Amino acid sequence: MTLTAAVQDTMDNGNSDLRQQVRQRLQEQGIEFILAQFVDIHGAPKVKQVPVNCFEGLIDEGAGFAGGAVWGLGQGPESHDLMARTDLATYCRLPWRPNVAIASCDLYVDDEPWPYCARNNLKRMMGIFAAEGYALNGGFEPEHFLVMRRPDGGLMPWDPQGIDKLAKPCYDFKGMCQAMDYLQDIIRYGNQMGFDIYQSDHEDANGQYEINFGWSDALTSADRLTLFRMMAGQVATKYGAICTFMAKPFQNRTGSGAHLHFHVADVLNRRNLFPLKKGEKDRKGLGISKTAVHYVGGLLKHIRAITAVASPTVNCYRRIQSGEFVYSTASGYTWTPAYASYGDNNRTQLFRCPDSNRFEDRSPSGMVNPYLLLATHMAAGLDGIKNEIDPGEAILRENVWNLSHEERRKRGMILLPQNLMEAIEALEEDEVVKSGLGPIADEYIRLKKAEWSEFMRQVTPWEVSRYLTML
Image (tube, rainbow, N blue to C red; front, side, top):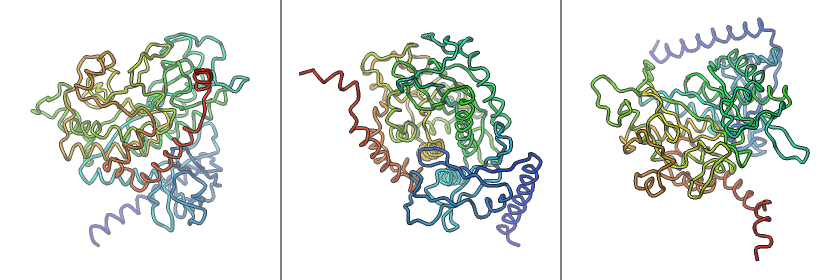
């Protein structure tokens, strides 16, 4: 038997063993139905509900979908079926629906992996990254609002006791206690599904909350964020609230991000490659290695194109403020970087280094498709490592927001795109970031241009108020 055949035989045996373990677990848990789940180009989850006795078929053949009915999957009504095949490693029971299990799926067409599937694409980029000796690990911090509809159809923060009114409500005891049952459900359910949630809090805006996940590989982190959003939306209804990950639902309140803590590891031994090696010179004053410096260099070089993926909707750019004019929220801060910088442990940086073992990317919006973001991260970061891109001097112990715009520009800080079309144009011109998306790039650009065009046809109340009687 050849080495390749022996490895394949081992994999097949492993899959057979895992299949038996999952089958037994489903039986022991009393599972009656399985949700076969994947995401569209926006990151919105799509599912089919399948009786548990069809478990084998979900793995071998998959659940069939009409791809033209889903955004951004490169299909029309004439296309052959998308077959969503479940990943055995992702099966888990839904704690709030204990007779239902869910599994993440990879999409196939005519028995071949479908390249427009965001999960397949991320696995493709992980393979490219691994071939260079690297693995990307990380964890998201999904900020979100609990809101309610006013009688006139507008939004207001969920505030059943009428106490979440502070101008600076972040970490507020009363505000958090009001949502304690919701947050405890989220943590309890999330950890039953293996999320390793280690804390939660009331965030900077009224009605806004954040959950912190543990570390994992890129694929698991993307799966977790997707499932978390599904869970939070269902749990919120129990308390009469709507859970929204919309980046900026309120004009005068802080927006919602999905901050990503990340590091690059050795693909073979999983050792974190970001801290300085013994005897290596600390070139940036952050205790980080050459690998970390160049990875961040790649991210900064390509940040304008990455922003098109990190902030994927028109509304996301309400969150990214250039600060050219006086602007604030009720709390006094937006907490969102508009200029691309990196440096030490302060939250005015785009890439914050809380410790030498990781960076935090503070740019992603709460609306981000995590599969696409992580794929572009690896493409840009790998470009940085291979070409030894220098990110410039780190910002140490300085408030970037207090620097003048001229000073920021002198230091080489790039202004992030200020609207969706500007970001999409940057993506169009960036072959490295587009390579991280594969064929999804063209579909993404097409759909986002259409979204911008539709938005530009809208006439808002602000425009009517400002211009109706100006002349």
